[in-house]
Length: 113
Length: 113
View 1 (cartoon, one colour):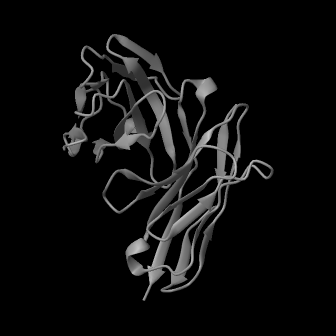
View 2 (cartoon, chains in turn cyan, red; view 1 turned 45 degrees about the horizontal axis):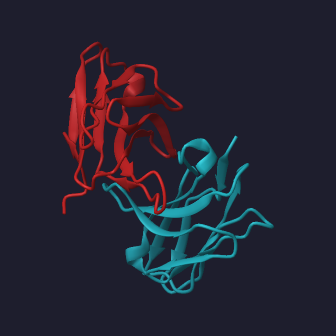
View 3 (cartoon, each protein chain N blue to C red; view 1 turned 90 degrees about the vertical axis):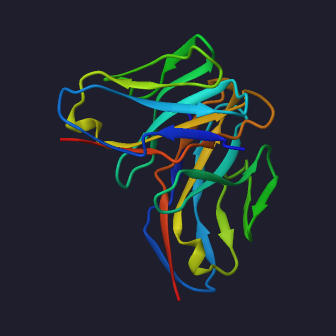
């Protein structure tokens, strides 16, 4: 079935460091791919998304490119800030499964000054 | 614009008690979902609904019930609370086509003692 595999955490970085969080997926159809962010004590918020191969989603300095050939959607940011400390979830939604969402296990990021 | 609202924010139950977690959305979304998030884990789908009067089981439905009498409301019922149901519960909603982004509520933290 459809699934998402996400890089294990936790990840600790210094401010202004480069961030990569890996995400790969398995899907039988043509899924949409998402990154959600969860700040402490809050619900999940959409960070960015891509709906077809080679699309790049971007928001708040974060980027991810939908790579069909490697079934990946890695999250990157060139210079992290303390305010980026949160849990990041990769997810997919596939039309052939009723648009159900499948989430990865989440990667906790802590950015230290 | 309120988005997805959930009540209560926190609740402590004794084993065997019952309760209903409320979820309301004001975006006229057809699809609504209930997830649980256990500590350090991703989200697991409990139940979902594709419209008023239509519900279906997700990955972990045992011990829960749902109903969908209106487009706006999607309550989750726990009949006989068990310690294994200690978790954070998130409600979400989305359109079924086009921009199928899921929008999440702030969550309900439930402890069963």
